[in-house]
Image (cartoon, rainbow over all chains, first blue to last red):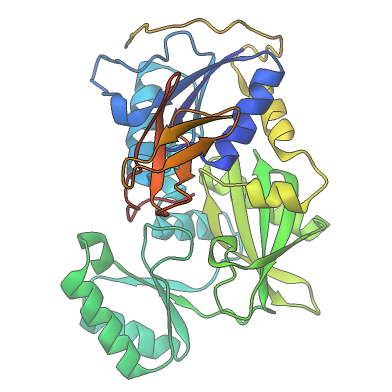
Length: 302
Length: 56
C-alpha cells in the first residue's frame, strides 16, 4: 500500500503512524500542505501514486480544504471532507448528533451579544461558551455570573475573529471530574481513557490525568452512533457521564484529526498498529500487502 | 546522534535518530521551538507560532 500523509507538523502521533506503516513495508508519501497548492483540475501534491491519503493536518482550515480538493480529484482520503466539515465545527457536530438521536449537551447558537446574553440567562449559571472552531480546550469559558457573561461576550465581539461572533452556548454538565475519550475507527472502539482533573476542563492537553477505560456496551453503542452521525472515519469521541449511578452519558465532541499519543501510553492496545490495520482495510482494494516507496512527484489531474 | 545549530541562539541542538522532516524540537539552551526542515543534512528553522485553528 502506498499512503499519503497530509501534514504541516509531525507530532508524536504522526511519528507513531509513520513508524508502523514503514515497519509493515508500506510506502509513505509525506505531503507538507504548506508546500502544496490545489487547483480545480489538479494539485502539485504528490498524491498520484497513493492508494489512500490520510489527513493529519494540524490546522483545521487546511484539513478542510485539502481533503475537499483531494476528494474532488477522486483521490481516496480519510477522514472524508464531509466528516471533517462536521467535526471541525461544534455547531455542525451538535446538529449532526442531535439529528441522529445521540445524547449531547443542550446547545444554543446566537449571533449578537444581546441575544447571547439572553440565551446565557435562560441556561442559568454556570453555563459554557465555546468557540465553534478550536481545540485543546482553548478559549472555553465557564460562565458563573451575568457580569462575567457580559465581559466575555464584549471581548469576543470586539477582539475576535468573525467566527467568535457565532456564540455557541451550552449547558454546563456536572461530570464527575472526568470525561471519556474513545478512539474509534468507523465506530469501532480501538481504545479508551478517562481524563481527570480538578479543573472543569479535563483535556489531556490541559494536563488532565489519564487512565485506561473499559468500553461498556452503552458507550460502544454511543460511539458507533456518534461516528455514523458525523460520517465515520478515524475519530476521537468525547463523552461525559451525566449520571454515575445510571451510567448515562452525553457526547460533547467528535475530533476528526484525533491525537492518540497519550491514549497509546495509557492502554495496552497498540493504537498505531490498530489504526494501520484500519487503513489497510480502508485502501480501495483492501490490499494489505507491502508496497515499495516510489519517489513520486506525479501531479494529479482531475 | 548528530547535531545542528539553533537558528535563534546558535547553540548546538542534539538530534535523535529517526528524525522526521516536519518534526518539532526544543532548543535545550534557549527553549525556542525548532522545525526540522531537512534531515540529510539536518536543517532547522524556527517553528511556526501556534494558530487558532490548530488542534485535533
